[in-house]
Length: 231
Image (cartoon, rainbow, N blue to C red; front, side, top):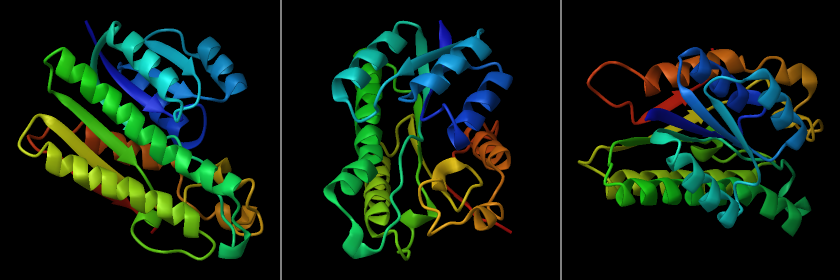
């Protein structure tokens, strides 16, 4: 059976670059994203070794059904939790809607990881790598990012707890902490990150390449944390 890499949030931005580079490596890619228009385009663009699943990563039933379908397609070797949405506001302007939006990434990370780990237990296959892509906001507090930072710190706590839970096993957990990346991630927050400032951020192709090189290193080791900053 094929070895499969699952990538969430792979329809655009860094996630898209990860999907593209995984396919270039000859890997079988399952992409999970809620953007129906972009996912439909990817279905047309990527034929061989690619399967898209359109839905919300925070929807437990959708993710459970999706992972159960994927497990029948091959051996899940890597899960990259990349999906998430930001909300950048001063602390007094955050609403419940903003909070819910930010926390969907954390929820999706937990749900997807849980389901993949259950599949590995069920099939008695412990060899899997879970890669949680977060942000440098998981390492420090930032202006106009109080709720976003809260979710990223939560993702970091979850990641560190998984490392302890699976220490000494063939389940490998990797935390990725990139700084600003030049994508449309900031399109709804131009009062905070202007297009001019965004254009000084890191190239998403280069960031994806750095992540992939470390995930698929041929050395007999695991890079547990990847912090990627601008020069």
